[in-house]
Image (cartoon, rainbow, N blue to C red; front, side):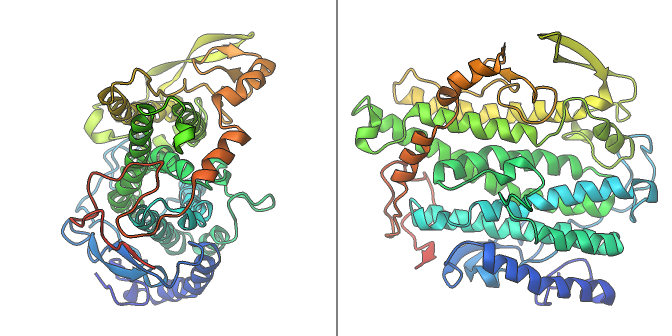
Length: 466
């Protein structure tokens, strides 16, 4: 791995001068974007960060104090597999693509651009959270997520520059021009235009929205376009930490709320976050994250699978039929004002199949949080709303549903909206708790400390030198 090139990489960038010059031209624009939209006012601070020094298990997680603008952003791909084959679709078993097939060029570029757009978007959504951190441990985890999202952007930009010529370079430039929540140039996917302006939002975002990233990247890690597959496999090693931050963050909030509930039924009086508010944030981010998988019935999913570009979750491990040409999938749709089953060709339902895998994974997190409530002797439980609830993409977007997935009128939904989703008052209350705690070893009242620190360090460690 060439770590000390201007752009650290393990793709032999120095041997491709044209590509190297193009990426080095993109670099200052990236740094300008990071300066403008990265973590606000913390750029000169030393942060205990994990940085890849190789793609091997012992080298991809090297810890040291780093200033975020000096972080070793770069292009890291899993080593190539000799004789790699396309693992699914109409070209199953044929030699994997090393160059972009002309007939799939637009589809493949769309996949890469959409994935790439999510990476800088989340940094933009979270840029001011450092000012309200509940502890130095949490501030450090936020910044770790941010710099890795920045590196993931580099991974996608490398593919655009390296394999798509002028179109790819234009798309790479556009990734730095869009802004989360900007009415004129918003990010591509709506979940990445939603405000993430408090730490309960952040934990729910990294739990649910980053978990979507896990499933999308896993499907792309099986792509027959080998450079994309190798890129996504390495990204997944870093993505696990982002989900850990969200899962354990929400678990710690629930644990602290349970402790406060044993002192007072109204945890607001003690400066805690009520369980019903936590549930509303779960409902909000889970439903927006479900939209990221696309429509339940999708010709794009069928085309991507047929071309061998995007598979199912754990395609090789979980499935024996890698053609998926003859099967059908039954899902519930709205017909004549009622929910009714509809059979669709299996390939057209692959978004929904991936979404089902995602929901099962989310349920494991809920089980952990509910165990904390049970261990505290409480009867209350958190839950996932039905996947039809509060959807903006797909079969259910034009209809209203309650938390159980029952079809209701728009008026009925509006009358219950503040019971099901965070209200202005809920958000203002949560924001009122967001007072920074930056003393070493101290933590905000509304969240429990972690059970362990980072890489063997205790919670009482100077994770960020302020």
